[in-house]
Amino acid sequence: MMIVFLRIAYRESITVLLGTVMLLSCKNDIQQVKQVMEEEVRPEMTGDHLVLIYSDSARIQYKASAPQFLKVTKGSEKYEEYPKGILVISYDKEGKELGSITAKYAKKLEDEMLWEARDEVVIVNAEGKKLETEQLFWDMKKKIIYSDRYSRLSDKGQILEGNGGFVSDQNLEHPVFKRTTGRVEVEKQQQKE
Image 1 (cartoon, rainbow, N blue to C red):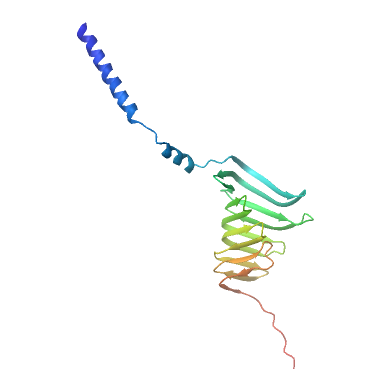
Image 2 (image 1 turned 180 degrees about the vertical axis):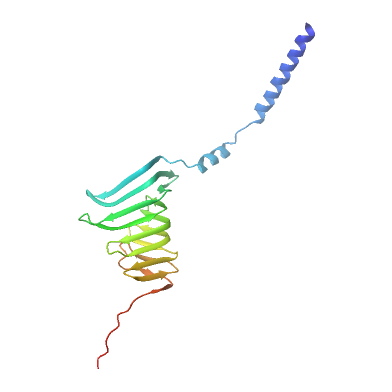
């Protein structure tokens, strides 16, 4: 009986010893844990099939709708992200639609009031001008839109292309294109005899 007891005690001692070695060999480096936590950014708010209304003095300025919405704070940076696309419609003081922007991805930096839209960005203004590009920035404070990517503006059968992007007021009334090409119809004037 004594030999059986010693074998059991011997096995238990080895098990406890191995467990202790394994436990003592595991340690957490606080800096590594902090780094992992900082790299993982979790949204503080999420939503699906969302409609957001931006207003000033009870007047709707913009209406945004998106299949998915994320609101994130990462350090001092605060932003809204629309990873599955967005439609933004702007309105004038009387509530008339001024234009729209659609994109497959968008992000709004809250403090800067700066939007980034990319992947099949299309803007249509109240006059029917249509701008297409792959990336667009909209500065809501300065009320301008711009891009450094290829951009194409269509207006009543005329096409203007900017291989180096463009800058414009947010209503596309005065766009300036960089490295332009295009097709523009010119009216023929009759010569006076």
